[in-house]
Length: 504
Image (spheres, helix red, strand yellow):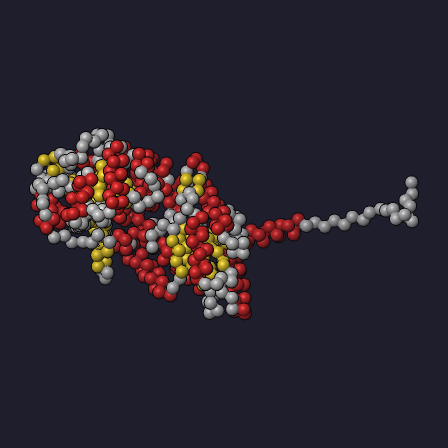
């Protein structure tokens, strides 16, 4: 039937085709060039473009912007211990949390690795930028659940830099990066910091200190000091803690707080930790012949050491090379480190005890765990942080906390050590609460090995036995520090100890 042209019926159709696959491929390539393939966020190139445009506008209209530079604390530890797939999942989760915390107009990017940046346009002041950083840190408090039930806390260090007409892109990013490292140096527990010019000087000093620390490790210039632990009932030594010191040629004797963070960030902590363990094990062997007794030495494990897959193999190598008995070692990990990944903690602590060593939870009470965590870990010793010991003799709340930890530790067969005992009145109060082992300046400061030997001889060990008043411990859980240590002659006055060198 012929179409009715007057009625406007169509008589045919014209089809026009255009191949847009090349256009789509170009769009995809463009997106890939300016976005991170893992998180989908803009990458460094896109961020620098956005920042460049923002700086150009600010020169025209005087608007002020800010850059947040965020770095995940101890991400390498997570990546190494749980695997790269878990590390990738962790980064994706962090990116999602960052999106939740930011305002609609804020521009989030992943620079690479575990570094993220945020461009805050038309920001009113440094306080406004700090408020955004605080919101980000609050959002990160909830642990991220990964595969196999692992829960890992995402702790960020954030640096903040404000723009100015005279600053380039590189200037702003550099300032934010410097401020981020300043925040990290303040505690690695989720901090932010606004850039100040003086920080640039400190940043250069940190770079110089890193080079000097590397040389000190290579040349064996680090020395292990020893701080004894004492029975609160008769002041006899029950064990000793190994604490690294660095005799810097210009800055004098440096305590770990001056260089441990740098060692952690650069990976120097592995060589440093091995040096401390080797020196401690060598002293254990020397003291067996020199003092006629076997002394147990406590050695601290840092976060990166604890998460290192080669930790146990490395300890085994040191034990074989020095001939030391693992039963003479007590490995200390901080509470906050222990609760970051409970499953990993249990595996490592159990393996250390299978070697024959004891394990201790250090700084207990300063992390975000509950007393119930004590029962979950294969622990021999709990060290109550000095924050709860300072003023405990007059503070009822602190006294109650110490009593609760003592009761819990006793119930699960752990020995409790109180740190920071500096006065006789504090010692008497703690002894009344049932504390049996203490450490602090009242007894002795950290000292070179020769001073410790002198102190040991002055006390004149008489016999082997457990700490008086400790009660009957489960033999499987009782720490070596209590099971097999010399009973030294009581010293009633701390002034009887020889003068000691060193700092806390």
